[in-house]
Image (cartoon, rainbow, N blue to C red):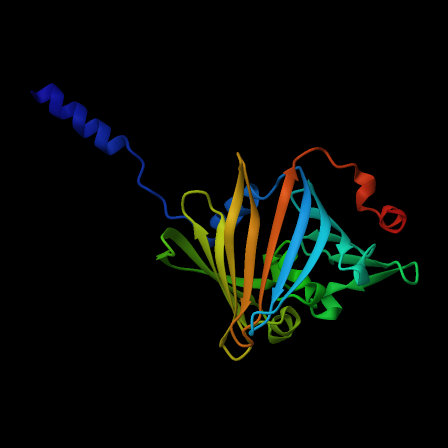
Length: 258
């Protein structure tokens, strides 16, 4: 009996206590799930007005994970006819480097470079998504805080608040702060609330479907609702493949020739 009790005591005292994860660790774990080497598919975007009118945009989308700091994305638009042939190339970074974006306009056969930092992000093809919403978050210039865990829409979630360190950065981002909900079972961001510079709820981002590419997770259907205007955008990627994408796809030369 004494031996049995001693064994139990040894087992109990040798178990390491659970260590609470920091906000930085949660964000890092989420970043790892998104590092799909290559992924592409058909990109469908619906713009839904407050009255329920729907406008559709279709494109081919390509994404490549270059390294821990960089992701490249390419969009070639096919519909509506007014934007057919338009191309959008993004090189995004999460290490403090300036994000780069180029747009190809077939009507004038010209490529225009756009600095996201100076353009305030801008809205993606008239949707409720800004270009910043489509690129890596750079937390170097942001204050982050872990809030109490919550159960949101049936998901046990880690909750993190983030905001720009200065008013200038917050103005550049276009929001005062955001609160992000990470699923505890896989670290996927399943909801994000955007608050304007006055602290009022501005937009709500939700992941409605995703692809499990173990060890990666890729959202395939997401929505962004503007609470203040009643406008909503739903983005869906179908016919997804993870075949290797040549590096030449993510060059301005390819953007113009495609």
